[in-house]
Length: 252
Image (tube, rainbow, N blue to C red):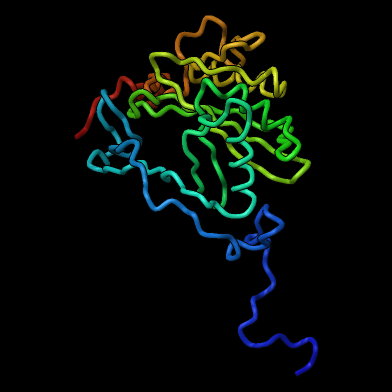
């Protein structure tokens, strides 16, 4: 057998799609499997667009589709995920900061209790073994059927020192939509938090200037919430008019 001939059954050269962020485990197949087997159904959508109240005008009113989210993972998570989880939980006053850990599609998400968010962010940035120096994004999600946890805020953090990426997720109820601001730790979150406030109504306590960023200051409501009216304007055609979505009648 020549030197450049691989034995039968040898692993092929990994492609970019197979590679992971973890240098100690080069491909997905080398990672310890810790994907969640339990799934969480957070909502059941009806019709083509999940329309409620005014009736479904699409003709697909009989469709029912559950919104399924991955459940909590259990340690060991595999690779550097365990190192980050243990180091995070070992921070001063952070033993109970992690509500749960979700691993899905090769990415790790730490659900953080909102009262521990500010301290968690500082620890993730300042600890030499963590060094998540960059907050790339802050975004909001609204799950109106998740009683007591309707508002979710998601933080994408990157460690340029260790070439790692994690996600934090914090929840708050509609009745008390307050979450601590991370702007003192990550100044890049300033306008991101303003957008989440503008679109979802989350109040970031400690933000230096929490004002709308997309909508006018006197705009009523928060447009990306699922309970926000669809709105729209009448569209005129020759011989007829199509009403805005909120004014259309149901055909079912």
